Length: 192
Image (cartoon, rainbow, N blue to C red; front, side):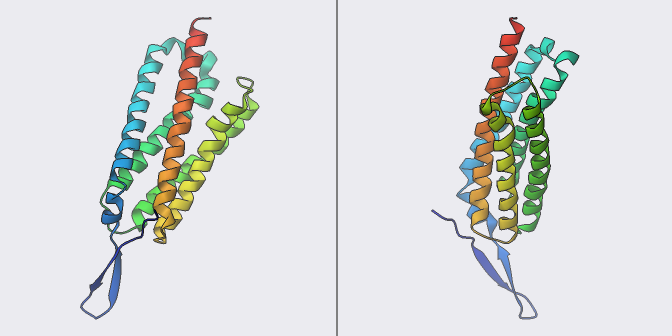
């Protein structure tokens, strides 16, 4: 079902009509989704911190490149999902500021994802296509979709909320896989 933006027209003193986007009503239908995705991202981020602290012996200078290439982006992506879920839950009355926040997050995430994609392809730590996709390409696609969402929300187009939800879901699913991959790698290397 496509969601339609609701508009309330308010008559101002000089007889001009000004339209306000009533995003609060539209986002009520998305409330549970953003609570679920934001909570999942925050919880998984916390569990990642616990797992890393338990495997603190793995975080040495010898593994510094691996940590920056594989672990840091997962933290960034889960934080982005948590942050943007909170942005979506906040009762905005104008689309411009949340669109700017979504757009800024998308640009930063796209730059990080591009850098990480290059690092993952160049490294000899992995030769698996799944890693190339999950650590680099899929988050990059998600951030580009977030950029589309930001522009659509700014322009008050129906596509914006659907694109935002899809991008956050893609980031969450890809990084659940990445967090699991990181934990398995840390356990395997710990036992060697």
